[in-house]
Image (cartoon, rainbow, N blue to C red; front, side, top):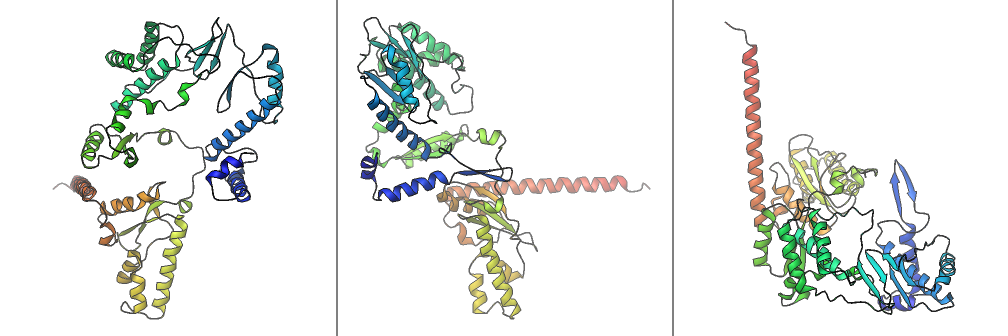
Length: 460
């Protein structure tokens, strides 16, 4: 039904498009307690395809249902699966039945206005005596009222933006006759409950008075803007706008993220700003729900994981090999074992290190070079995962960092040639610090052992 619109944005035909879509929907499954479960209806929660299909389905449903109605609908607004409609009082039940008859799995409920008021998302819409509509910010009775707490471990800039965006949203959604003092008192109390300092709240409120003039406007019922918060409020923040406007070309801007470490991360961002003015830095927290809460999902076996940095231990010495793979780890281990099997065959055929086949085999990986030169063997059945990432572009950098931070690797020197001198200097300092700690620990253990031996020696 929507192919005329969708087809303008792709070069593939309708049959192939439907085949790809069906494949994405039908391939949703998960594993729990050693059993595999397949999605039997609808789309999987968290799938990138789910919100797109939900939007398409709602558009088709709304178009189909409104064509069946025998009366005009003066006001209809949609946000995902929530609808705001103005209907004749005696047509509400009839409209609900038509909506619910579209599909048995898509069933709607209705909420009618009470005392001329109707909540819609975070907006309370009021019908005035002159039949105009006015709105104000609305919070459900069950709402916790939590925002990012001011005492949380986040950059101060992020917390200030949270408060500024909250003020912007509340004032933008409020077009009723609520006085400026009443509105700002509600905002003040809400932010204070989240431990924002009074002085900061007052400064932000003062700034908002010039940014968003309150004229107590009313919205005509023909074009009610009942949910302006559907747009991105962060994009409207004054600080973000100033950053983009000050740059000559927004097309050349690049965005990167850094883990937030107090005092250190802002300093790094400041240094990067001087050398890379086109780069915008955003901070991310190292602690999230994934690191705090225990996962209920079955852990993915080590050999089935991909996009990882791994290490192999030598069976005959303390050396290790560090590598990376974008494929499943078992595929990479099969490659190592294939090379070792080829080496074993050469040994059985009395090949020496100077043979061309052995030289070629030793040039494949640092693992094979160590095996051939020392007649050692690596444990390829129990690799250890050192790091992982969902972005394959990060893998080479992570691999070089792990190689540079260890002193007992068999990797080639050229494996870290692409590492930035800044990273190399930091990793060298970390390596020296760890070496000192190990040396101190070893010395303490030796002293403890000597003291124990002395305590057990017979006294003359």
